[in-house]
Every structure is written in C-alpha cells, then in structure tokens.
Amino acid sequence: KLAIAATAIALSAGAASANNTFGILGGAERGDSFYDVSIARTLGEGSVQIETMSGDVLGMAALNAGTNTDVRVNFDGVAPSSDLVAKLIVNGLVVDQDRIKVTN
Image (tube, rainbow, N blue to C red):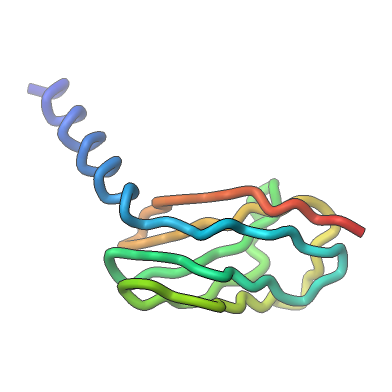
C-alpha cells in the first residue's frame, strides 16, 4: 500500500508541474536590483522566488492563476554577484525552477 501511495503522489506532483512553467529565462547582470520574468504560467495562485545558489532568498513576486507576463522580482537590498535560481511556487510547492546566469 505504501508503494502505491508514493507512486500516486509522485504522479500527481508530476502532472501538476507539467502545466506550471517559466518561459525562457534570460541572464542577469552583477549588481542588478531586480529580475524580470518574461512569462510564467500557473494552474493556481503562486509566486516566483529568486534565490542565490546557496538558497538565500533575494526576492519574490506574486502570481495569479494563468499566464503572467513581465513579472518583476525586486531584490531586497542584496545585489547578485553569482548565478541565481528562479523558483516557481504554486500551492506551497516548487513546481519549476531554472538557473539564471549572472554576468559582469
């Protein structure tokens, strides 16, 4: 029974994340105070969270269900100096993530 339950959870999580996605993410420049996500599609309300590679949150922006365009994530007083991670969070779960290259 435990294996069946674990499989069902894994399949439902995979199905949910299949429709929650970022568009193509561009790079960022060292010292930027924000990052613009051109498009994010979600099945429910959620957020985009930008983090350092070590997991420190630089900023987040709320998303509505559906297609969200030109979403600006302001960094809370910390400018990036190395690569970042953009996470798409819906219903408290990370459903997509992508690396953002930071250049000089």
